[in-house]
Image 1 (cartoon, rainbow, N blue to C red):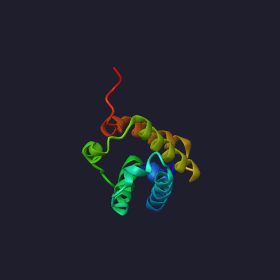
Image 2 (cartoon, one colour; image 1 turned 90 degrees about the vertical axis):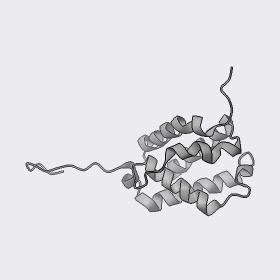
Image 3 (cartoon, rainbow, N blue to C red; image 1 turned 90 degrees about the horizontal axis):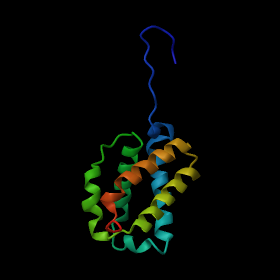
Length: 132
């Protein structure tokens, strides 16, 4: 930081802080390794174009972390509608995502930020109706 008059300070995004695109790709690769190995979740990925899905997840995570993307969050609902994802399974995926970020030594405030975003989009993805 500079003390000179007129100097500006740039605050790095969470995306930049964790290492940008290479780190996001590594996180997504690790996440899908866990998801595909989980017997409760693996069926969701039957017949799915995994490279395409990973590409979408990289774009979404980059967007969430303040990186280059502009991911259309409003597309999450239509993209997941046919999967009938339960709240329990959604939470399981969120836990894996947090675990992967922790493994990669992502700062806790960034992990919490990702968790908040995942919580905010849960209603777009989860198929279960709210309990009566």
